[in-house]
Length: 239
Image 1 (cartoon, rainbow, N blue to C red):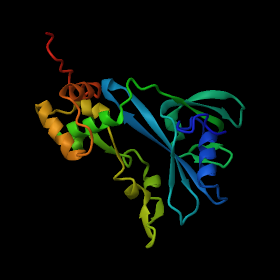
Image 2: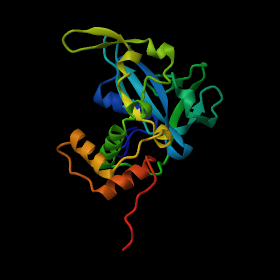
Image 3: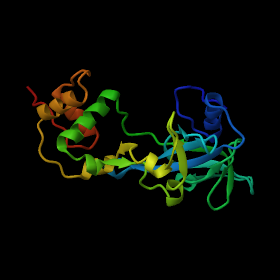
Image 4: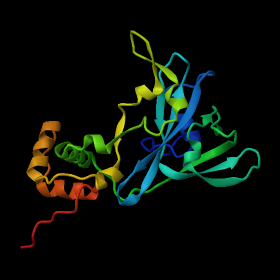
């Protein structure tokens, strides 16, 4: 079943399989694996990123279909026919069939899998994201707060080989391929020690990183970084 909103990430495995079928086609020898990664946010909260890794054949590159993020999912146990709610981590490494049935690593088979989305306490705009990246660069804490999707990946999944390249094919390990795919660990961003920074310094870093973007005001920079847990809000004094 396709998502009602084509721009919305799929919630169910059936929707995700439909996306694969419509966009890439389903080959008989395809392998579909579930990857689940934990993303820490500030205030001690977290959620899990869920991605289907669709590999049409041994000689094709993986195609990644992101689903809604969440910490739990509902599904029907194929053996008992009972519908239950599970921790989403159980899906990690599961194999998905063309009819959206997932076989977990312990052999359990589940159907009608539906991720229960987590509502984020805030939604960052593209401008907000640029400001956060500029703040991280200005504070020189990139190594502390950017986390690779390679972290948390099982060694078995990391060692799987895939083919890359358009003209000259090369076999590389999946773990090596996703090593450079990084996201911000907001939990670490809130906790890591940062040197004192002036808002103008962050604005200059913003211009260096995004020279064609509109320059945000100092108040916008301050508010956005406060929402991300970068620092405590800095407000203009009341007149």
